[in-house]
Image 1 (tube, rainbow, N blue to C red):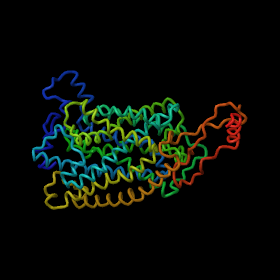
Image 2 (image 1 turned 30 degrees about the vertical axis):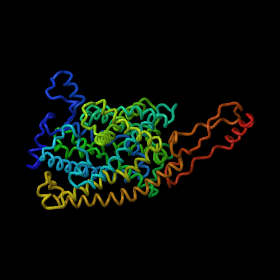
Image 3 (image 1 turned 90 degrees about the horizontal axis):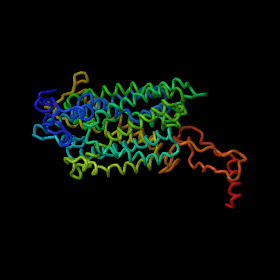
Length: 524
């Protein structure tokens, strides 16, 4: 790093250095080096480059791992692979831009003797310090909305997954239960405290990814398997925006960097995390799509197609735990914003802060019950929110921050030579803005919202059990006083607009005849 940072960020050689973000209630100056404190440091207080890598990788490959085969069925095998590589590289680039802007902002503030020990820097504050309040307001709106719906998606994923182990309760009821469970993340103070969680989360998704790949290869291709994608533009761009969302998990980059003892080491961490994530997403998505083909168009959760075994149940349980962790990743920045709004961000009492955070969970819980569309909601969030939050805004902010010769000459971190210095960086940023604006937000927004509205028309809001199979039809000639299943109000396999699939088959005439006989016999 340049000399400008040597007197600020570069002097952070240990967790106890003055410039680093830490909570007074978590670490006390002069605390004895006991076995308990060492264990706490091992499991709880993380701030190394390895902690940041685990956090980035774990946050990036959460429940979206289960929807990527669905995206492959919309895109086709070749496009699915190419979009993963392309958006993985693009996401790593914009995460790098965010890290550069953070270092620039923090260095300027530390020159002004600002102390961040009890304050977590967030993305909207970086934009405010570098570009002014209008940029702050735009960044705050997009970032908070994205993180809000990112948390919603985790709750939906929890309910969708647990249903494949226990279907005695519908998915909406499971959403109630997991909403209460995820509310306990209010007790996790900051990203310093995700050391053991982020490590375990990545282990869990690694198992699930390789389970999907191996189980699909062992299962083999289903009879008459078809790989007809891509067939419709609406499906193609819906799948593409889901992958855009996959590699757009760096909305919490600033918070993760601020939890590091040496934030300047972050530059290549997100790229390294993305390369590891690709070793999980590519084999799993390709294998499941190879085995089941077009059946994935009506099963946005890949676990729905694999037979139930102890290995699948283990994958479900591990993903549930990881989704709890990822819920915390997405919600923690929202907790910080809320704390700053009500004036409790620097409060030393963890219990007071936890109680103050609870109102943040309520709208997340409510939205997960309204829109339980696992899979399609990823694409909608990706096109409308991720496109601006972590692609367009960072690229534009970098170009405008360093538009003057004076700003470029005094930059804390100039662009590397292999990207062409400032000229190359500007060209790359302009390409990112144009591509994401046209393809991600434009075509992707049209496709994903068309699909999302179709889910509402097909299943309705507050649906009890999205994409649950209908109950079996009663046998012909059954006794009149038999207990009859309710009429399946929503078709199971009409999930994508313009998919070119036949509508769900209507119940047989025998079904209506039996219902009529039952009602007649009871005088209804």
